[in-house]
Length: 226
Image (cartoon, rainbow, N blue to C red):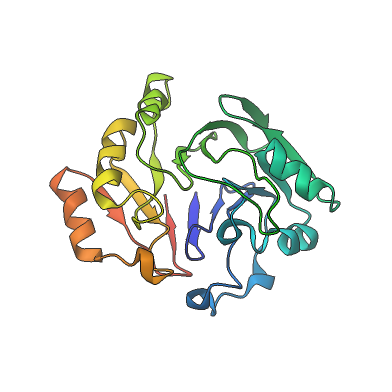
């Protein structure tokens, strides 16, 4: 399984049979200017919430690739009115797809679409494929609900957590989140894009290492096997 980072909270997971794109925000991100968005292919686009820095490129990518959206009811309905196919979900629900099973879990944040339309409740996803099980937290504060993930029987191979602070968890809380979800292989997202969320990379890595965890902070455009 290959993970490719496109900056901010946008990344692609290639399972070997399907391409899953998460929270597409590339063209408005000056730091991702070297990414050729026209070269990105996707079968599904998973959207954690409606903020512009998570949906800015959704419509264009979905129209070009034919990808189907997986998100909450409000976001799927919003883009459905624009002719884009999607599968609506809500907190606590799970559904099966050709690539595996997705469970929508709680996130503590806000959600409104770029034109002011209500974006439903923010969420995270636990994705179980034949190859791996992983958790994408979306934009969230630290919450005890994360403890439910291992309690429900999910054995995570890796997790994608926001670490930029200010709008989401910072490194301190993300370390605690790794403990709650019982996962020591963490990929950080939602950092450095704006001045508000710039972090000290070395300090963040040390915080995780001190707890026996590994924090991956990828360069934009970098791919790794997970």
